[in-house]
Image 1 (tube, rainbow, N blue to C red):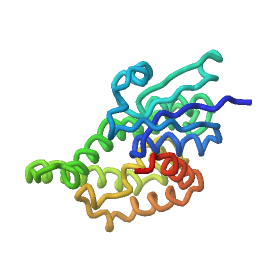
Image 2 (tube, helix red, strand yellow):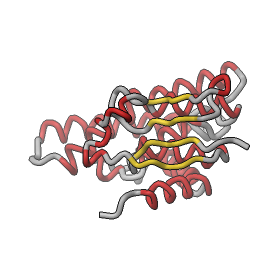
Image 3 (cartoon, rainbow, N blue to C red):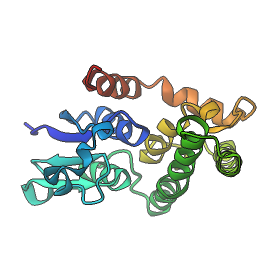
Length: 215
């Protein structure tokens, strides 16, 4: 019997990646909310497992060599879970490389730039036209990169759904909030809808939403 993995998280795109992955992999887990609106990510106990004071992070009692293992950074967590189970990451070297490329594209480009676009379009205390324009344009470029890739491949890594798709999908749920009109990106829309209908994707989002503190 596998002991539950503890997921230290909050309901953000990076946070929901991990609950989706755990549902896809049928791994037991418990959710521990780190309320980033109350600076709980700076608590010394959390910093021991996530020194960059960012969610998500996990603690796996049945980790490396059967020992308790903590992992921070969402991309590293997805790789860890995929390698732990032998799922959602191709074993063929060329396919594994392609999946890794798109995983790292998400963590290095898609997430940070869409996050900035979202912030300056929605949450910034004052409108900064230059920032809105800069990050919205970059977000639009990245959606086009995604659409172009999905014109040639069913999923980001190739023919099979993988951790690359799990990494990217949560960030693309609200393109309008990122200053992007994604309605004409038909390959992106096909992929987005296919991923959205997966039972584990629905459940991973719902469980995290349900775990959030009531205001």
